[in-house]
Each structure stands twice: as structure tokens, then as C-alpha cells.
Length: 313
Image (cartoon, rainbow, N blue to C red; front, side, top):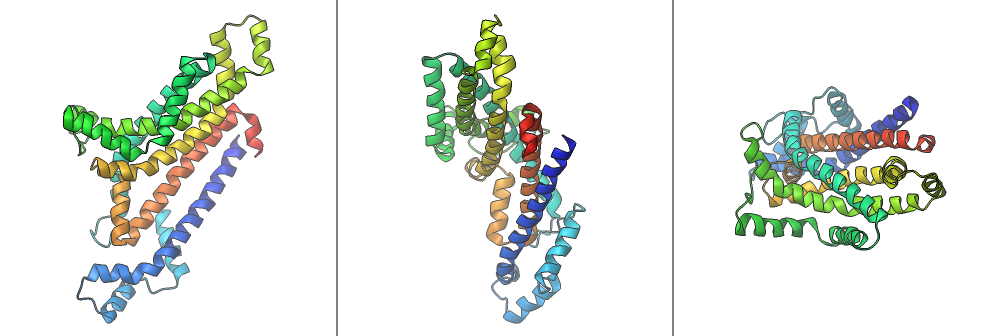
């Protein structure tokens, strides 16, 4: 298991280097535009060239990237060119806001999906139709439309939750809960579609296998067969889908945070991209890659525990 985890970690490190280098390579074509924006409308070609030299952006690209990477591995992601704020703490502070909606949204979606998927696979009729209906709605209805409907109904009409804004948990736990409820519900609806369909399908496959019929013949209770045996074997593909859903919900944060005016990671990344703030964009990129790598590593380790055959790949 240790070698399996180290191999997956090595792949993640290589991926992080490749993604960040390609990002830096693409950004290099916009260095002059970035400096022109930074200097303002009175910028001249000579002043832009001079500022590029001062910032070190006229050096060979490999040298620039190597210098950035050497600082990044020490936790130094540089300073924003437009706000003069340290990139690392700024990225992490915005990440906290995003994780406060993504993690609860994924956790609730996973719990509800497992319950509904197991129920649908074990009972034909209404439970199965409900599970398929939820999956269909989640796939067909965009997260943006769900967010707008929730705002209109629960914020504008019923005035139960605020339409926009974010309250720090330390300032008011109740205010934090009210400000994150609607965004979390949007992510729950978006996340349940794929997870419910996968759990339902995997459970149907497992319950139709020979070992389940053998266990039933041996007289084991149905709940024991479903929860202790079939669900464990069905957990591997469901876990893979869950890790993919985390990445998808994380990408949805750009839309959700703009709808609800949350100062999260997605809106922060969008703003930095508009201004071509290279240090911030690189910081956002490396943190995103590390996050995705860690999530996939955890999923691979748990998957390897549940399914030893997966360790061979």
C-alpha cells in the first residue's frame, strides 16, 4: 500500500510541475499587457520594457519558472502586482470560504446519494424512480439556474436566507450558516446526480452476483448482505465518482460565488485572471493542482484498500 501511495504521489508531483509550467508558458505571452495595465494609460513602450526588466520578466522563461518554482516549494508564492498582498495567505483565505460550501455540499450529497442509491437498488418501484428522477434533474438543470431559483424563492420571496454576502464563522456561527445554506444546497443538488446514479448502478450489479445469492441461501439478513458485503464492493466505483464530483463542485464555485457574492477562491481566481496578475494566477494554479492531487491520492488509497486489484494499476 505504501509503494502504491508513493507512486500515486509521484504522478501528482509530475502533474503539478507540468500544469504550472504550461500555465506560466501561456501567461508569458501576456506579460507586456499585464505591465501596461499596471502602469496605466500613460505607459510608453520604454516604460513597459523597463518595468518588465525590474520585475524580471525579460529573463529566459525557464529561468523565470525555475525561480518561481524554487520559491513555491518553500511556500512563497510571491506578491500580487496590483494589490501588493502576499499571494499565499490571500489564496488560503479565499480557499477557506470556498471549502466552507464545497465540503458540506459534497458530504451531504454523498450521504444522501448512498442512502437513496442503496434504497433504490434494494427496492424496485417508487424508490428506483425517485433515484432516477433526482439523477436526471441534477444532470439536466444547470447549477446557475438552481442558484437563481433558490435566491428568488428563499431570499427574495420568503426572506429566510440572505441573497448575497458571506459572514465569517468566528463573527457569527448563525450568520455563517445562513449565508452558506443556499450555496450548499445548490452544490448538493449538483453533486447528487452522478453519485446517486453510480451507487444505484453499482449496488444493482453487486446484488445480482453469485456471492449475494449464496449469502441469502445461507440465511444472512438482507440488511447485513446489503450493508456489509454489497455496499463495500460497490464503494470503489462510487468513491471514484465522488472524487470527480469534488473537482466538479470546486469548479462550480466560480459560478456559485458570483451569484451569491461570496469572496471565495473561484471569484478570486476570476478577478486575478481579468487583471492578468501573474503571481496570483500562478498561486491559484498551484493550489488548485495540489488540492486535486491530494483528493485523488486519498481516493486512490481508499480505493486500494477497498479493492486490492486497484493497487496493480
